[in-house]
Length: 231
Image 1 (cartoon, helix red, strand yellow):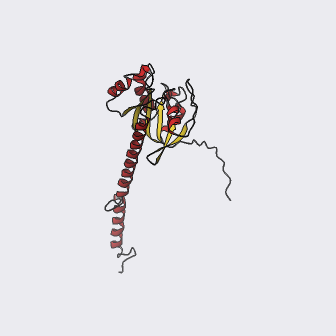
Image 2: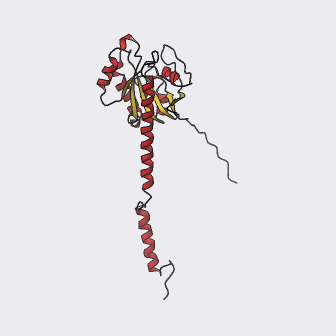
Image 3: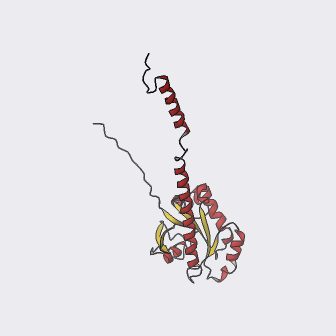
């Protein structure tokens, strides 16, 4: 037999979800997951109550959608600040990103651009995922008018507003989540069909065709069957 070999391996589990929640601490991510699913994440009025990603399943129109609550990200997360950096890689395995913006926060106007830049700095592919921007805590008096201002400031984005406390916008958001997931799945199916078509009807590998042509030439040279021709 062969001598035995040993190796020390580090395996990192990546979460897979349809929708990944992205936001600063206390933006309402855990509250939204708690409302939509049977998951019961820790909810408290102080930062970093979520220290591990939480998953839950939301049912909408007889369809199950997996939601992922990612620990709060802070500015500089891609460089290791806060807790977000160790979980940013999990977001790479989600189909859609939901950016939760706390409209009661003093920095609500710049929150989305900061979050998007953190994702882009970590991985440009994350910034290209389908997404929706969600203004939260609409029930608070200080948020009045801010959802409209957020939508006006982000004309190229899909913007929605919710309040988990008053239930405002929650049913509409479920339909938005479903539509985004269906769009992603349709795009993935189209790419799969396009890839399959490369091997059908004229989609053969040019190098393989060239190799076959060379073999045919050799066959002609040696009498058609690859052997030596009769003298």
